[in-house]
Amino acid sequence: MAQNVVVIGSQWGDEGKGKIVDWLAEQTSGVVRFQGGHNAGHTLVVGGRKTILRLIPSGILHEKLDCYIGSGVVVSPEALLGEIDELTAAGVKNVEGRLKIAPTATLILPYHIALDQAREASRGAQKIGTTGRGIGPAYEDKVARRAVRVVDLFDAGSLAGKVRANVELYNVQLQHLHNAPPVSFDEIMAKIEGFKARVLPMVHDVARTLYEKNARGERLLFEGAQGTLLDIDYGTYPFVTSSNCSAGAAAAGAGVPPHMLDYVLGIVKAYTTRVGSGPFPTELFDDVGAGLAERGNEFGSVTGRPRRCGWFDAAALKRSIQINGITGMCITKLDVMDGMKEIKICTGYEFEGRHTDILPFGADAVAKCTPVYETLPGWAESTFGAQSYDALPENARRYLKRIEEVCGAPVAIISTGPDREQTILLQHPFA
Image (cartoon, rainbow, N blue to C red; front, side):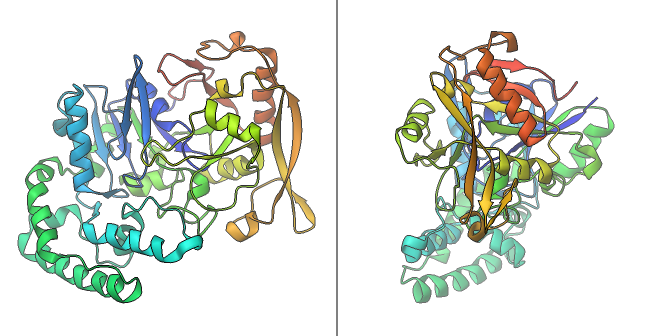
């Protein structure tokens, strides 16, 4: 029996993780975010009402649950407090009382955002496609050992010195490398003073609490952001995010031992999408791709950016399954495929004169991949809102079965719509 479950994105993000985390959360005593920042938007629909979360774990709508932000997350205090205020205004109770932030998490400050945006502007056509929210520069500070961390808010004397040193460093880059305006030390310190009193009560020894909950036999849910193909090490580098989005990062990012991670649920869209720059072998530039985008409402929940759409890429998913050790898959947005006469699955690539059945590493290699397709018959019937496997059209079941066969992992859950109730359960992760 699985006590703790890790939920990760198995493609290029935007797979629908938020709904599934929310759906599983009521059976746990806590939900933990372990990496990423407020560039990750998780959309929940409960009773027809939509909620978009960016930093706060997707279990927050369950009013008896505590939610945790681990050390692997980079935290924008202003974005966090804004999100708390939005949830409170929507009627969610005691958000600040239930939210616990690791003292070792890195803060995103205005100079990170300024540099992120200046860099992207300087790259022109070669831009990475970041959200401009300071995520990458904040992770750079962490690795360079100059980060301002949550715990630094407790020590006003050393805090000012750390911020001043970083402002001086960033202003050199902003002014002399990117011809951008400098940031102000005084203004940044004023902003810190403005949010500090609200943030400090939420600071908590997350790692210890999670360890103790596990020892008592309580269930925990670990929520990843983005997707494996955007992982800083294993994604289409350099067109990736700045953190490890694979299941193994849950241990380091939350501060728990690896043996606590019992089940890895990989969230997989029934087709493939990508936001921003970078290679995308199965991308469609025709009416089929436009139809997927329209029916799937493929626009970023945080940025509003349109997502690029393509056929299901089983070779890319196979890489994710192996990296993450995926125990079971949750297929989302199956209903978007309704009404298609035929559906294609990419089973591999022609790559440098040979065939491969798995995504290679790095953007340069992936850009050389030509997809090899297998065509399956589509279905005319609607799958929207279906709540049992037998209710699915025969060809939809064949499509899911073929995904299992090509990728090498079982389908555990099928999502047939955005609401909690529009879910088919085949194998419960906590069973």
